[in-house]
Length: 213
Image (cartoon, rainbow, N blue to C red; front, top):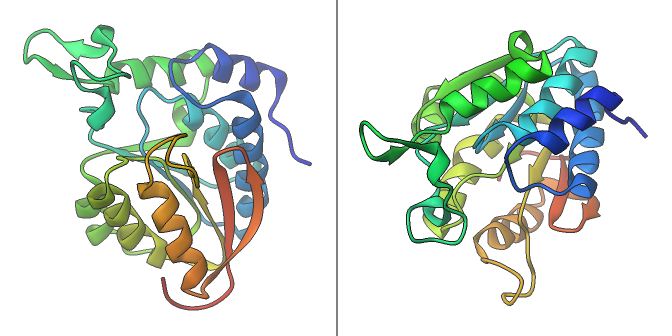
């Protein structure tokens, strides 16, 4: 089982974000294995870079790039008045969330800036402009059906044969969380194009075994 360096794990635990350590370790293991394909590792939904630290370390070890896609204005549940709102990442000049400066500081502190390509933009637009195959796609963006489906439809087609698709915040029981990630997870399995490799709490790791989404 691949594990991050102690300093990488310490940086992950110190970073602002929501992913628990157990899920982070499973994410790292999946990313490290996917790196063997020699293709980039991509995450959708960066926030302040907590999970990016793990992907960047796995990418560094594999000699590939870690790519992040986020508009850095926060997802629905991170807006003012919602449960996960953090006023410290609001730009006082424009009055909107801006997690990009915190994200950059996170990578700098972890010594991983040079291993990450950060794309600032909306996921469907970036996916539509993306031309290459990916060894790993981690979907952890917006949790509405519109956004989760857009992330899946935009990025799942780019997962190479034998590549890995990871979906976060998959809750079969509605009492535990929103259902949009769960629905795209079910869609991926029903497509016949992906098989489940592992389950760690709300993290699902799938591998592409055929064409389609």
